[in-house]
Every structure is written in C-alpha cells, then in structure tokens.
Length: 188
Image 1 (tube, rainbow, N blue to C red):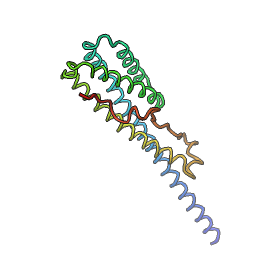
Image 2 (cartoon, rainbow, N blue to C red; image 1 turned 45 degrees about the vertical axis):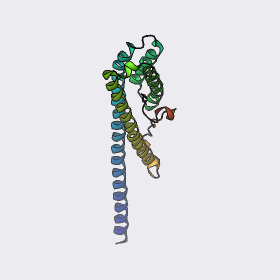
Image 3 (tube, one colour; image 1 turned 180 degrees about the vertical axis):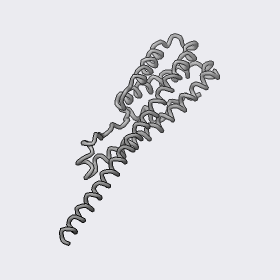
Image 4 (cartoon, helix red, strand yellow; image 1 turned 90 degrees about the horizontal axis):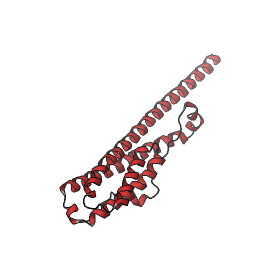
C-alpha cells in the first residue's frame, strides 16, 4: 500500500510538471507569434510611409527645386527604412526618417502656394495618419516583447525555455524619442 501511494504521488507530480511545461510552451509560442505579427504590422506601416514619400517629394519638388539636399536625405531615409531587418535597424532608420520629414515639411512651410495644394495636403494627412499607425504598432510590438521577455526570464521558466529555442526579443526603441514623440506637422 505504501508503495502504491509513493507511485501515485510520483505520477501526480509528473502529470503536474507535464501540464506546466505544456502550458508554458504553448503560451511562449503564442507570445512569439504575437511579437512576429506586431513586427509585421510595423514593417507594413513603414513601407506604406516609404511608398507615400516619393509622391510627397514630387509634390514639393516643383515648388522648391533648389532644396536638393532635403530630397536626397528623404530618399536616403526611405531606403534605410525599407532595408531595416531588425528593430535596432528600424530604430536607426526611424531617427533618420523623422529628421528628413521635418526637413521636407520645413521647406513646405516656406512656400504658401504649396501649402494650399490639395495634393500636398492629402499626402501630408496620409503621412501623419501613417505616423500615428507606426506609433501604435510600435507600442503593440513592445508590449508583446515585454510579455515574452518576462515569461522567458521568470523562474522556473528561465531554467528550461532557452533549451526549447525561445530567446528574448529586442524592443523597438528609437534613440531620439523626442523626434518621434508626435508625428511631424506643418503649421499654417
């Protein structure tokens, strides 16, 4: 009888540990997929903004042909954004993009007839909307990364999850957070 109780306790412990491992593994897979989805959302919005920029540049070029440096910086920032593969790369590209957008909108402020252009106003509104979506996507991504990293680091998970192939993910942090605190705006 004593042996039966010991075997029953061992079986119960194995079942409890098995259920814990199963649920932990599944929750980590879910969090990992959520972070991948959030990163995908960010890249979609960054690509959308990059696709809008050539139209904005063409809209401004006709009014400010002598502002060649501004257009080159926007084009370079756009290329960096499209080439970014990781959150760190995207953060660097994001800094350059914010500076480039500020420059192009500053040029636009100097040309009242451009400010009145319906095409320019529509493009500007779409870029501001996209900036808002990027910011929301970034918050969603960082929230998912926070949950995943926390689940990986807590005890006893930290003892075995790395062996299952789960690693911490990096946050999408921008070095100059003041530059992205709010979307670029033009004051009329």
